[in-house]
Image (cartoon, rainbow, N blue to C red; front, side, top):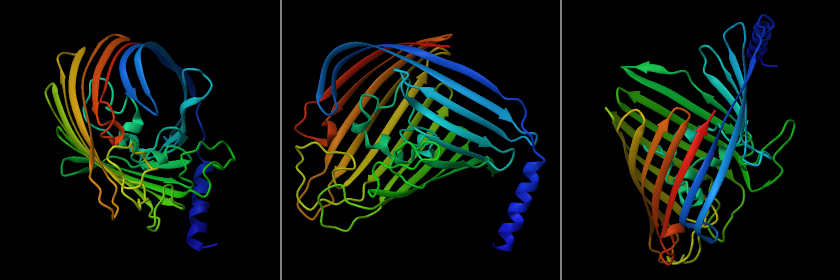
Length: 361
């Protein structure tokens, strides 16, 4: 064994011997939502009409602390049917060296960076995340990963935090104790992500990139397979009750098309070759401590990146939202309109309205 590794392991073992865990605690929280939704949502098939929905979520959180100040927490959040998890992770936070997170379904760094524009209620991808490439940036890091978040550093009055993540098999498949992600084997290899957040006074800026090894093509193409790369940056500024933000995203699945891609056909994220680029802008206004409104819009552009003649296709989305809270109860709503959904110029525009009553405990 390398002598330096041996010395390091010996020191770590010695420090662990001197550290003991204090009694932990378990807490339960949750909420319920009742929604009234109407309009046409463009998914795999058009869904039109009006519906009343109900959602209930329960989150269990266990936590504890070691004598040296290191804390740990275990979080499990169930889905509405109570048959699976919406998230589940283990977090270990050291007093001065940052924190480490291991988990499934959530916790990867990309959650801190994608669609980071101010809204009163939901992100623009809420009707269907497959419509919004910006929402998919780095999501292959959601499972089978470890994420490191640094302590916050001060530099000239600015606060800086770094995020680093690694997935040994970036197939976005849940991995249980002692298991390996068997699904999708041979399609994707390892994944990495990195991000930095800088805050200075009322300004906050974030930059993020993620890459995963592409082992085989997922669409017809003659070019060599490239590794997939996703990236996003954003800037938000708050002054008094007003917050404004702008974000740009980039998603290259690593697959190139060998023929013309019609502007009048639906494009599939990571199945259609080419590049998806997006811009979002949003402004939110807090009328008072309980009531807020927002307006946001985005343009997502598809480019096939092939040698054949192709034209870019733009998908445009805009939304107006409001939220009112009173203790543990909230009433929130949005109206979202989508032009050329799925980057298909032949598709009917979508218009979705949702009103939600939320109860938290």
